[in-house]
Length: 228
Image (cartoon, rainbow, N blue to C red):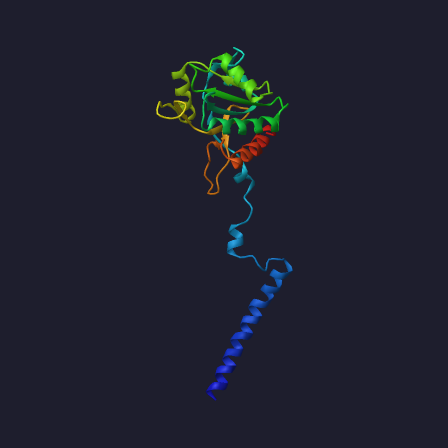
C-alpha cells in the first residue's frame, strides 16, 4: 500500500514537471535555442561600442627635419591617419624586423593620400638627413608620406619617453648603443592616438611592430580610421 502511494506521488511529480517544462523545451527547439544557456549568453558578439577604437589622447606636438631637409610636425599629418615609430638606422637587433613590418604597412596603403608613416631616429648624431635619405632608399621606401625625422637628441628622447611613453635610451653595453621600444603608435585624422582593446577589454595602447599579429591588427585598425 505504501509503495503504491509512493508510485502515485512520483507519477504526480513527473506529470507536473512535464506540464511545466515540456512546452518551454518545445518553444526553445522552435526558436533554435535548445543549446543556449548562460555560457552562450556570455559569449554573445560584442556590442558596436565595444568594437570601437579607444581614444588614448592627443599626439604630443613635435617638429623635426626629414630626410629631404624639410620641416615636419604633427600638423603636417592633420587630416591623415599615420603610424609612428622610434628607431635608428644602425640598429642591429629589432629595427630590421620593425622595418619589415612598416614596409608591409606601407605596401598595404600605398597610394592612399590620407595615410602616412613617421620614423623618428633616436641616434640623430649619426642619422643626419643624408643618412636617413640613404636609409630610406636602401629600404625601398616609395611613399612620399613616409618621413624619416631627425633633430636634437634630448628633444627626441623627451618626445619618446615623456610624450609618447615609448621607451628610448642610450646604453653603450648593448648592441648598437641604444635601446628602444618595438611598438608602433597609431594616430587618427584628428591627431589622437588610438588603439584597440585586448581580450580582457583593456586598451593595448600601442601595436607590436615585431609581431605578425600586431601588423595585421594595426592594418585592420588603419582601415577603420580611414573610413571615419
